[in-house]
Image 1 (cartoon, one colour):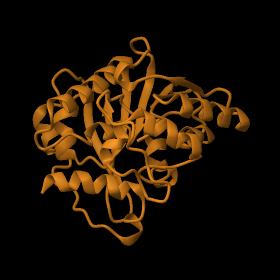
Image 2 (image 1 turned 120 degrees about the vertical axis):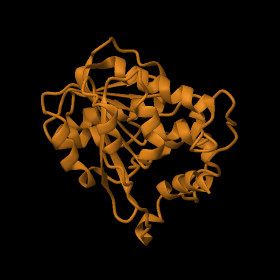
Image 3 (image 1 turned 45 degrees about the vertical axis):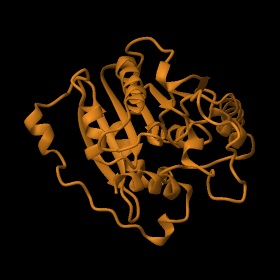
Amino acid sequence: MESRPANRNSDPNLNPDPNSVGPPSVLTYLDPHYWDERFSSEEHYEWFKDYSHFQHLIKSNIKTSSSVLELGCGNSQLCDEMYKDGIVDITCIDLSSVAVQKMQSRLVSKGYKEIKVVQADMLELPFSNESFDVVIEKGTMDVLFVDAGDPWNPRQETVSKVMATLEGVHRVLKPDGVFISITFGQPHFRRPLFKDPKFTWSMEYNTFGDGFHYFFYILRKGKRCNEEKEEDEKCNDPSISLYQDELEGEDYIFRTHIDGDED
């Protein structure tokens, strides 16, 4: 959840209480001022588990020679960990200038000079067509859903932003490129968006996490299967149970908003 869409109607007065787990309202996540303020004082935070929980999936789906675009780097160490695994051609973007400046300083201090960090909006990717082998996001698109309303029938404004992001990702991916989305968004909510007829990618996913399942979606451009085969993929969505260690982080606050909409 490291890149935020600008929301002209968000309230800049909704600032987080430093003593609370998260902001006073999940809608605060839509306010770019919130993220600038947060990144000014916060050095590091990982949404949806750290790299060790899905490292095997990264290694299975990203070659060390791949050019990678990370959407919404924030203060995550995802790019650092991929770099240590030999994936060095990485470009990170974030909407927050504060996040970009701090990320640049951190990477230089570590000697990771090959990683590029750019201030950019994921809804309007400033890259040419077919520029990257892989595009990856970890919790970034989830922010777009905080004011979606009914998750079975999300607001049109939400759908438009999600589709703008996906269209941009599809455009900048090379013909056989891969889009990786790490999220708690369940397949029955993500599938209609990912499988829009305008996209040529196939869809598969894995799960990870203790108790609550996080999802690791793999969308392969140019590999779209026939509809019958796609519908059969992972048709039984995993059940959800929460262990105590899953209830203590900010991820849980974000999840309860979405889950509440489903009732």
